[in-house]
Length: 224
Image (cartoon, rainbow, N blue to C red):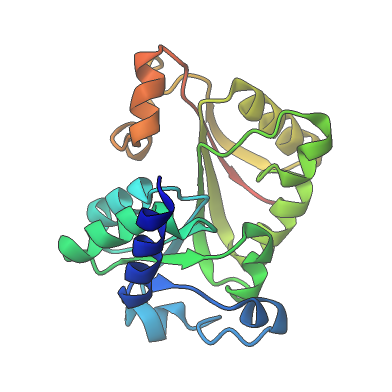
């Protein structure tokens, strides 16, 4: 994407009511205004809150919001020029129960209060295969601690990925740490019984992976 296009999208994001772009000071200073108040002050309802981490273009967040009008969805990504597409689509189609937060996932506890979140989706994250980059894997032990803090006691995490490495790494970590794996499937489109919310929504890249006959894997778990 050209720099002109990116700038145009950044400017548009600033005008979108469904895009929240906190300053570094808000992230680091603990004074983010919507923390603990997403339901009452942004969505104006008491519905469950579902996060999509590393939401990219926001396709999953938008389509989940269309499918489950009784829940609130927040797509999180540091790349605002990417989720511009999802934010714009949501505004054009009048989908009120989805928002986008531009930040690094490492800072997630600055933006959500303890027990504020009901579910987390991690869709097609970078598997960070190189050994030294394990600290960036979105299902490593440090990230799970952050998720545990903001999730309700019975909150669940979903991992959907085309990376068999990421699938195996996460399953091993979950079992090793005594977390509750509720469901695991190493090929959701070839094995029967896959949850409908996993197979009925496909991102642009997911469709490409399927054309290449790549397995799409899925795990649903609770952090103990």
